[in-house]
Length: 465
Ligand code: ARG
Image (cartoon, rainbow, N blue to C red; front, top):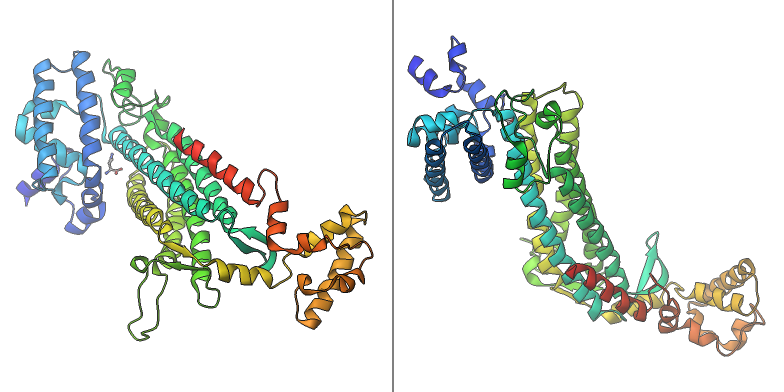
């Protein structure tokens, strides 16, 4: 018992007179999830060791030993041969213990001028930074795939909806571009968050700084951080960057979820606007005819867990006094799961965008039902001199008549239409066509195919910047 105890808590055992129970050990340990930060832990330790050596806090020999030991540990982890021990609590102590086994006293000197508190804060920042870079890359792939889809359908007409009622004709390309806007903002948000992630906590030590003559700027440069954290208490306790990251992630998933909802509706046989390639769908175990849009449905569902992680982190922080508290260990699993969910979802969606088949005839048929060009008729009358409110009224009456007759505005004769306003002329039928309607919305941000093509070109330009 005693020997096992002293093995476990080498880092802090001398102070204690009895071992923790197995349950407490399991409860307080993080190694089985934080080991995924191992590569960042090693990277941070190497930068710290290099600084200690240049500041003559450790010898060049110690530095060389640490480098050699860390290289071996890295290889062992990569090869799946590293033995992670619950007894050693977390990724930091596991690696440090192995280093000491491999290189002796140099391993024990690595922790000079450092604490696990600034060490873990550094590891998480390195992890979140790398994750942001991956996610920004995937958002780029996804936007690019959406732009290809939008381009193929820059003049495919579909009904645009408000309140889920047919509102006005739009182009499918324009609709897809709305999502490109969302995912572009998401990219900006991630890159903005990255600025605040990219600061170095190391040097704060446990909370108050260290008595050793450290060079924090040097470590920051080595690790590619833009700056150091400017207050040691804040450095070890700040998790704002993790919250911001999850908030940006929750918004990405919210956009994915909105799009998923549309994909599900569009693929429903009742609507039949699109088909999604078989590799993203599954069948039913009982109903042989079914082809279900599982990927969009699951993505819509997974949005809940990412939103949950954001709330978990906000709640984690709200009651914490300065500086570090063990509560902070709970920051990792929500972060990891947010990253995993985002990475998998974006990867699949980038691929799935290329697997969407559009059915223009179904979209067109739907746009022809629901008087989608009613606003065009009102605008036409306004251009002939009628005040907009009067035009609105005249067209409302015309629509009512069409509803009774079960026909479209464009099915009425000129004489019929003139009953609602004498200003109607033979040229009215141009504005009542779907093509005329979309082509007329020809300004920046409008649905005209010409504008859609320009918007695609602008978005592609942004992607290459
Ligand atoms: N596993 C800990 C965490 O994730 C590392 C820091 C522990 N520091 C401490 N003083 N107990 O936050």
